[in-house]
Image 1 (cartoon, one colour):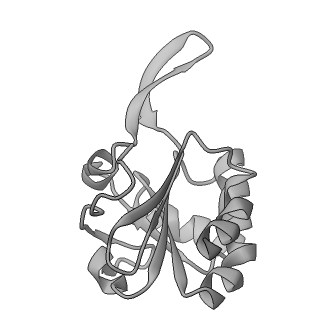
Image 2: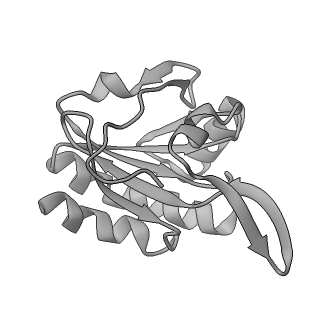
Length: 152
């Protein structure tokens, strides 16, 4: 996980519509950048839907929400449409941004180790600095904790 107080690594990735989105596009706004393992899975769907429900609160506080996984643009499109997600989903099939944000880690599940995305959420301020970082977040709880964090 990247330390609080560091400059957030810049990126340019395609969103669910195939448009290239860069972190610098959001200069002057807060960014809730969350990394999740896979579209259409139970936990990731719960997390995305909760962020979607709370999205108006994020916008009221001048923040955008961006989800990132290694799924394809087409997968993100289906995922976003299925759940009516109002925020950006970025496709990082090469895992360059996933690795630059230090969320690609060895995971142990039922005694079996594999590499994967550790569910992580960063809050990036208007100047591109990481001001909060949450690693190994619970999918169901993470979205609800973020509006309070924005007030701090």
